[in-house]
Image (cartoon, rainbow, N blue to C red; front, side):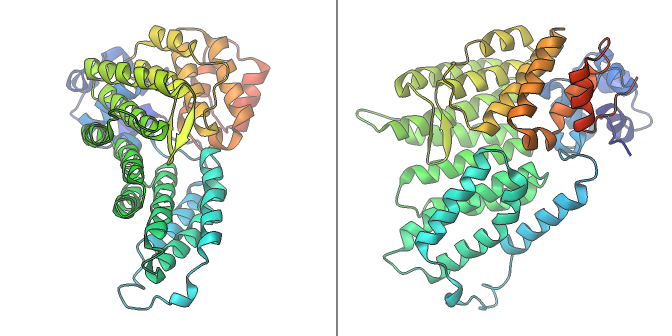
Length: 399
């Protein structure tokens, strides 16, 4: 059975007495957009538009968009989430049943953390989800058994594991449980030896808040944390990188509130920082650099429905971009979205095909690429490559 379109979800969620004109007026959206979505003549819209519609309908954005996994994978994702949940919210410690003998060697735990980050940044969330229950249990056992000499190191490892858990859960459509993991990452981050770990935990917390549709809170947390780590005098590149990453998180959150001026100011400040760092980096698991600045600039323009600016900004992506694979994929989705809205169907198709070729798992487990492919299938005569992509993503074109 084909999954419901956004338009079908709007029909399900809209009150019988709430007309399309009522919804358009309340959400400050063109009635033509609402009509085309409901009639299936348009399969997506900007995140800002969808967020406004979701707020009026009384649901969060994730519920309006529906599951990000392919049809038929829902039960599998539910099982993965349940396995992580059982460890994350376990009661053994409450009952005094944690056995210190189960505590792992810290060197081995650190290797496991590094290995799992590799999956995370490659967007390989299915195998990562299978690893995380055991890694999380090991981290919990390590924190319980830690000596005073090891406590700071263990806290840093525990913070990293909970950051990964939070980031993975939101990609498995479990943002509320991800919030629980993110709060644990905050707790352990404050105890880590590097003060930037606490800032990094807040960086992922901001992401979770955005996935919950809590854009005001995401901006507040990101900007306040950026002010705390704002570099003065001689500082490390890592501190600059974390500061810049938090500015970009704040900018994307501001853009989703329709606060274009605030987003522009934060982007401008981040651009200056990116010039200082001079290269793409991942410091204490915060992604930042010239390429990430371009990526988030495109994102903010797409959210503001300024697709021409998004396409122009995308051309500034450095040829030597060293973004993690999941970031590259998310950027290509934004590029495809902008090009499609501008009527450049071949450019949109090319971006989607590149995304799937480089990150097939990421593409298959996110809803936006399938929405874009579905709309492209209604634009003229689909190419053979597009029809094949549509088949691989299990996209059903609708009239």
